[in-house]
Image (cartoon, rainbow, N blue to C red; front, side, top):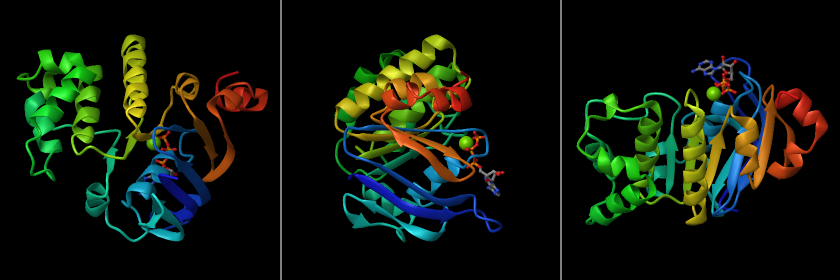
Length: 233
Ligand SMILES: Nc1ncnc2c1ncn2[C@@H]1O[C@H](COP(=O)(O)OP(=O)(O)OP(=O)(O)O)[C@@H](O)[C@H]1O
Ligand SMILES: [Mg+2]
C-alpha cells in the first residue's frame, strides 16, 4: 500500500473525533472519503498529513511508519495536501504560486511547470494573472497544480469541487483522473459524493468518526443503503 492509516483515533483535545478509522490506497488509485457534515472527513485527511496528533493508530507510507513524522517532512517524503480553504497565495501570480509549490526542489523545475500547464491549460493562459482574481475553478486548479509541483506520490485533496459550477466540477474530476493515471495516489474528501465515487477505486463512507462502509466506488454507488443515507437517494 502507498498509504495505510490503521485504527486512527484522533481529535482536537476533547472527545476523539475519529474513533478508530482505517484508510488505505495504492499508487495510481483514487480513494474518496464521503460522509455527512462533521463526520470527521477533514480530520481524517489531516491525520494522514500529520497536522493533528493521533491518540491511537498508525500511518505508513509505502510501508514506512510515518506516524510521528511532522507534516513538513511528510512533504519531503512525497505527500502533498490541499486544504479546503486558503489553499493559494491570492496576491501572487499563477506562475509564482507554482514556484512556491516547488519550494523543496533545488533542481530546474521549469519543465514541471510546463507539465502543470499541460494538465491545466487555463493556467497557461493565466500564468501572469494574480491568482486571487481567477474564477473558483481556476483557483482550485492553481491549488492542485501547486501541490503537484513537488512531484508527490500521494495527493490529499479536501473538497476540491466545493462551490464550483457543474462544468468546473467535471473539469476538476477529469484532471484528478489524469493525475492518478500518472501513478499518483489521490485521496479526496468530496461532497459531490456521487460524481466522486464514479471515479473512486475505493470509497470510504465515514459517519461519526467511524468507517461505515468501505468498498469500490461502483459497489457503494449500487448499494441502496449507501444511496439512501449518503447519496441523496
Ligand atoms: N480545529 C478544530 N478544533 C476543534 N474541533 C474541531 C476542529 N476542526 C473540526 N472540529 C470538530 O471535529 C468534528 C469533525 O470535523 P471535520 O471537519 O473533520 O468534519 P468533516 O466531515 O470534514 O465535515 P464537513 O463536511 O462539514 O467539512 C466536528 O465536530 C468539528 O466541529
Ligand atoms: Mg471537512
